[in-house]
Image (tube, rainbow, N blue to C red; front, side, top):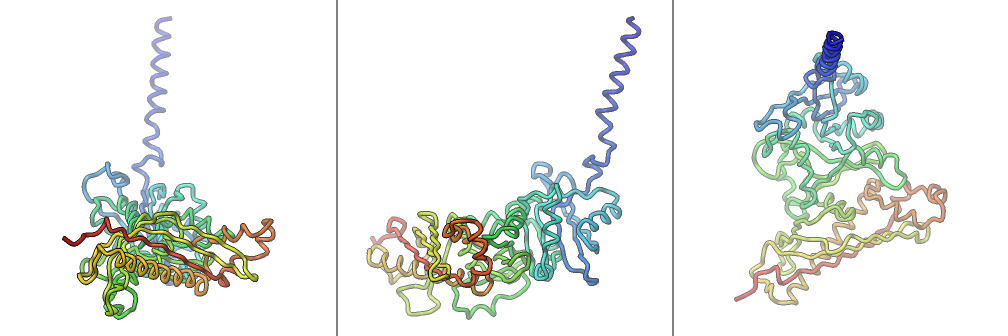
Length: 409
């Protein structure tokens, strides 16, 4: 009986050993996976898709995995669809393409202008693609954008793709646009999709120096406001109508989008100096929302009428020696100038999205919906078409606090 028990336990131990270590030989083992950190989608010369995969090794999918910079690898392939490209890539590299660590999807401007419905549905239907994956529309080819995306201040490209949108919270010059939000917006009857506007800093911005807009706020991706290495840029917003790219927003317009959407914690603006007759004189002020943006929407004589109310406090970052900042009248004058400037740029932005693009990227349709008794009445109103007929009333209240400022001694 003792001999039988020994043989029995030996057999059980062998079975447990085989089960425990058999997984290492399966194709799902991480050593047999090709981890994609970014995917670029272009139009090929044969009018098919040119898909670029950016691979990295397993130690680079998390910052704790490696302390050294790891150069990613790019592979491109022409295919009629994304799934076909993945299948062909599996064959070419001898590993299984895995998208569970994909941080970024990049569409070229040429493809986005043609429409990306099929690509968005395909990616959204892939269980490996996370809804939080950011989506970029690049003014250059997607492959060029990815080739020039370098983690200058990060060790890992995966970390760079995770954090580059974080500046949106304190600058308002870019946005956190995800494929999950894009998919929801393209199927929504009260809003439209948008994406991060990307590019490469190869174009000189000196031609914009005579513009009436202040300083760098008129710039968008693909311009070069400063000298240095040519790297990818992510400033501004790509605006869609349905699944088709219809326009682009620069930095200050992106900031307006963030203000209306209550997505910015603070931002720096350069307003015209109220104490100077020179058109090139500006004062830098850091603005902080005091209250959330309030939005009210009505139907007036058949046309949408939307009121936007904003409330900010301001801190002066640059000073004019001729302006007495300890004087309450001077602070009031500065506050009024700041309010007028914000009202102007917000109004311009809203009318640009309605009149030029007819694209409600701020989801203002949900406020209009409250004017209808039933969902059927709202659908019959056809908000997607009516947005271009909208009138806006923007009111901004700004308070520059003297406690933030240097006073005379």
